[in-house]
Image 1 (cartoon, rainbow, N blue to C red):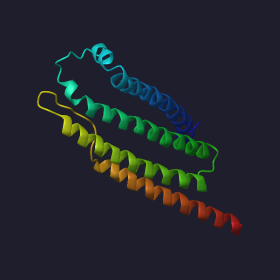
Image 2: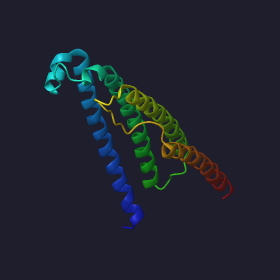
Image 3: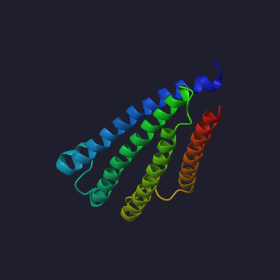
Image 4: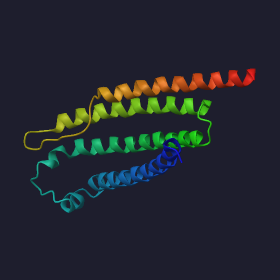
Length: 173
C-alpha cells in the first residue's frame, strides 16, 4: 500500500472521529450554557463560583461566547461532513466531480462565517476582560485563517475547472 492510498483511509477515520468529538464538545458547551441560563446558582456553585466571584459580572459575555461556540460546532460539522464526502470521492478514484467543487466552495463560505464569529468572540472577550479577571481566548482576526479561506475558494475553482476539463476530455475520446 503506497503512502497516498494509506493516507485516505486514515483521513476518513480521523474525520469521522473529529465529527464525534465535535458533537461531544458541543454537548458539553450546551450543557454548561443551559446550566448557567436555567439553573444559574446551582451550576455556578457546582463550578465552584462563590457569591462574590468576579466571574459573575462577566457571565453574560461568557454565555454569549458559548452560544456563538455552538454555532461554530454546527459549522465544524458542515465542514467535516463535506471533507468526508470529498475523501470518499478520492478513494473511489473520481475526485474531479462538480460536487467536490461545490463542497469546497461551501467550505470556503462556512470558513468566512467561522472567521466572522471568531472576530466577534474576540471582541466580546476583550470587552469583558478585566485586570482582575483576564480573559484569554484563541479568537479574533487571523491572517492565516483568511489565507486559508482564499485558498479554499481558489481550490474550489480549480476543482470546477478540473471537472470541466475532464468532461471535455471524455467528450473528445
